[in-house]
Length: 286
Image (cartoon, rainbow, N blue to C red; front, side, top):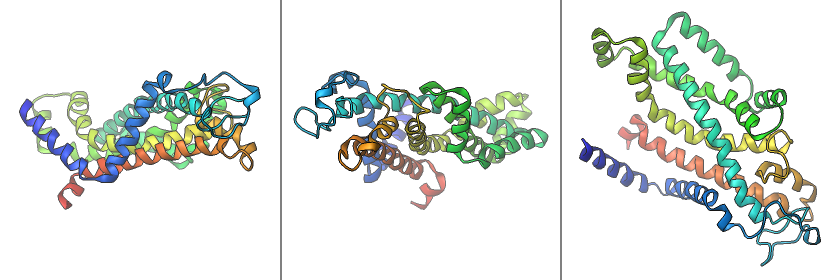
C-alpha cells in the first residue's frame, strides 16, 4: 500500500512538472511561503518605523522599492505584508471550504426538502456579488483582519457547496455506497467517510483558484479601509495610501499592486495545473 502510494505520487509529480506554467505557479506560491516564513531575515528595515526625512524616496540602494509617504521601506512592508495575505487566505480557506463541503455533501446525499432548503440558501448567497456581500458583512462586523476574513468566508462557501452537491449526487447511488448502506452504515458515516473524501480532489482545485480571489477581495477591503488597519502593511491598504502619489511617486502604489498581481497569477497557474491533473475527464483526454 505504501509503495503504491509512493509510485502514484511520483507519477503525479512527473505529470505536474511537464506543465511549465504550473511549475511557475508553484514557484510563486513557494516564494510567497518562504517570504512569509523568513520575513524578519529578508526585511532590510523596520516596516513600521517612519523616517520622515526619507519620505517618498525613489527606489535606491537604501530603499530597494522606495519609501512611502511616512518614509517606511516599501520592500520591508511588502515582505511583512505577505504574512497578512497568507493569514487572510488561511483563515478563509480553513473555514469556507469545510462549511461548503459539509453542506453540499449532506444536501446531495439527503435530497428532498433538505436539499431544497440548503440549495435555496446557497442560491441567495450566489445571487449577490462577492465583493458587495463582503462589504456589507464587514461594515456590520467592523474593520479588521479577522472580521474581513470572516466576511469573505461568508461569501466564499457557496461554490464549495454546489461542487460537493454535484459530486454527492453521483456518488450516493454508486454500488459501493449502496453496499455500505445495506451493511448498516448510518447516513452520517456515509457522508463523512465515503462521500466527502471523494469530493476532495475537486475541492482542492477550487481552493487553489479561490485563493487568488480571496487575495483580491481582501485587498479591495483594505483599499477602502475596511480590512487591515494602519499601520499594518497590508497590500491593499498600501495601494490606497499610495494612490495620491501615483503620478509623481508611482512606486508607492504600483509595487504593492504588482505583488498582488504576481501572487494571484501564481495561484491561478497552480490551480489550472492541478485541475488538469486531478480532473478525471481531462486526464483521460490527455
